[in-house]
Amino acid sequence: MANARSRRQVRLSRALGLALTPKAQRHFEKRPYRPGEHGRARRRSESDYAVRLKEKQRLRAQYGIREAQMRRAFEQARKEPGLTGESLVELLEMRLDALVLRAGFARTIAQARQTVVHRHVLVDGKLVDRPSFRVQPGQVIQIKPKSQTREPFQVAAAGEHQKVLPEVPSYLDVQIEKLRAELVRRPKRDEVPVTCDVQLVVEFYAR
Image 1 (cartoon, rainbow, N blue to C red):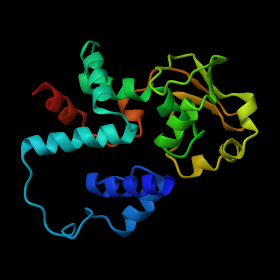
Image 2: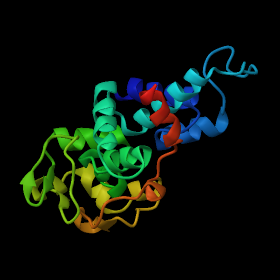
Image 3: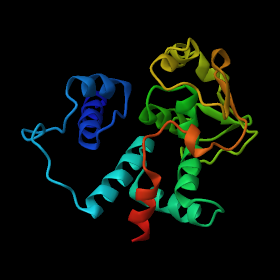
C-alpha cells in the first residue's frame, strides 16, 4: 500500500513538474519530464485555463488536500484583508498536518496527516486528530509522550527527517529532540516553502 502510494506521488510529481516527497525528488532529478510514452515530447502551448488549473493542482498536491477543502480555504482567504492568494497559502500553512511536516516530525505530508489521524499529536496539551485543525500563534504542537518511544518518532527526534526537508521556517520554534514546536506567529507567504504562483490560483477560482 505504501509503495503504491509512493509510486503515485512520484508520477504526480512528474506530471505537475515539482517534487512532492523526498523520494519523488530523487526520481524527478533522473527523469525531469512528464510520465508516459510522450513525456519527453515538446508540449503544445497550454490554454489560460489549463495553466491556472495546473497551478491550483500544484498547490493542492503540496498540502495533500481535497478540492472541497481547497475551495473552503479560498473562500476564507477572500474574506481576509490583504491579497487573497497570499492569505490562502498562509491559511493552508497553519493546518496542523502542514506544521507537523514543517517541524520535521514527519517526512511527507501524507505521513504528517497519518500522525495526526492516529492520535499522536497534542496541541497545547490536548489531543487533536484533525489534520485540518488550524493552529493559532502561540499554540504548542507536540508528539504525545507515550508515542515518542516509537521508532518512527525516535527517528524524527534524531533530526533525520529535517535532513531531507526544507529548512525549518522562522515562524516555527522547534525543539526537535523533544518533538515540540510552537507557532510563534502567522506565516508569511514568502516564508512558506511551497512552489506556487498564487495569483494564478486566485484567477482560477475567481473565473
